[in-house]
Amino acid sequence: MATETLIPLESNPDVMNKFLQKLGVPTKWGIVDVMGLEPEMLTWVPKPVVAVTLLFPISEAYEQHKKKEESEILTKGQEVSANLFYMKQNISNACGTIALVHAVANNGDKIELSEGHLQKFLEEAKGLDAAGRGKLLESFEGIINAHKELAQEGQTNTPSADEPVNHHFITFVHKDGALYELDGRKPFPINHGSTTADSLLEDASKICKEFMARDPEEVRFTVVALAASDSD
Image 1: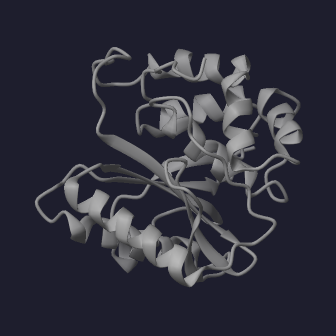
Image 2 (image 1 turned 90 degrees about the vertical axis):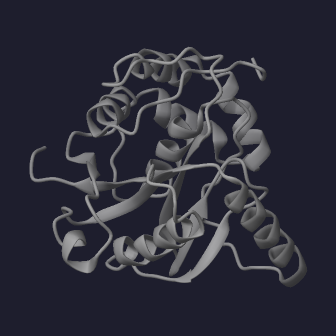
């Protein structure tokens, strides 16, 4: 199972919301497009926002920055909240699923999950470290099968699982006063400094802009947010 390669999820709110609802997330919460990162554009996003997810192309500039960032953290250290839920990515092309799990798992106090595969997974994952959680996901067929089913529903032509994919999903969350970048391909979460529940969208947007600035020729960036809506 560890070597399994999935068809990637599309960064499409309809697809992502069907996936979340299949796993027990109430319809009050949903993924919405963030149409732009300028302050006035951010006002269009429904509030409250509890997570921001970025889909970006993996480039040479990104890989170089990743190495430098990891090296600096290993040298200087960083604070990471004990309450943060973080897991490693073992399954190829599962980054969309892991980004969504990170978004929901770190907001369990707000999102009342109904009984289902995700609630069961989070209960079993509680006492595990990041690697153990990644391993656990491999055996959670309910979540993997939901990914497989919804990966076929995107608007673009569905790629085969064997096609090389150079796009990657990561999620930003607020936990205990800090903004964290959660990326299952990195050795640890990244603490990007202080934030609040109210300023998460604005602060995460600044980090998304830094990703874009590192690849100025690239346009294939997508930002979505997990937010509450009026419908229940």
